[in-house]
Picture 1: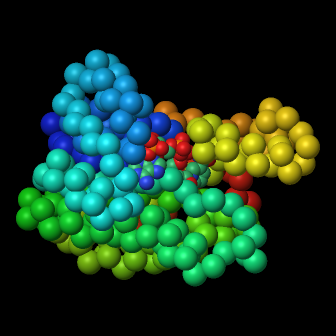
Picture 2: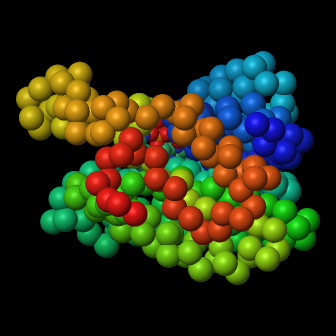
Length: 259
Ligand code: NAP
């Protein structure tokens, strides 16, 4: 399927690895020029070079912390006008409700709610002027189905979801389409770190922790960054113009719900 976005320009945040990289690869495969970002310059440059070589698109790499004001300013200055924005950042650490203080919530809200909101506020006016734009926020299944140990994530991402629900409907008439993409468990470094925690707590191997988790998912496996990226690219395509303010869950059927 031709996604109809060849030659557009996308900013994909937190994209040297994992789900962000999956989105960047899929957009590049559709002919989209990219601005990539991550904190670590080495992995970021490697990813940028691999995508240039594989897809022949323009790739600008900006090593910066997207959750800091200075980092965002650097990324936005390099990005200029973009047609497509994919927001992403690392997720907050797991814990217990008794662990979390105000500062922990502020940090999580800054990273996983206020950062995507700041990026949308900076980039959507240009999209509105040009009459076309796509925003995909990478959030989490925890928005629909809470993961108790990820209370910081549950809280911050719920806030972003509420913001998107209203804002998507304010900008839709201008040709700007905002949606959220909700990963269930996917095979990335983040999943390894969550599974390592479980393995340590239960005295089992990482492999056993992974198998145990996969056995509880109807698809009996973890998702891949490639599958995730392909869905993101569709949500950024010409074909997604009537999909407004939706929360698209990719979880292998893990959430047991009819609707
Ligand atoms: P990952 O494999 O650990 O990759 C994270 C990527 O983001 C890396 O490129 C990392 O590079 C970059 N990054 C992290 N913090 C950043 C920051 N502050 N500024 C700029 N770049 C940053 O993680 P993932 O699995 O792709 O997860 C992506 C998001 O989806 C996270 O918010 C995660 O909580 C959420 N999620 C993931 C899953 C899953 O199963 N994988 C499930 C639900 C939700 P640097 O470290 O070099 O910055």
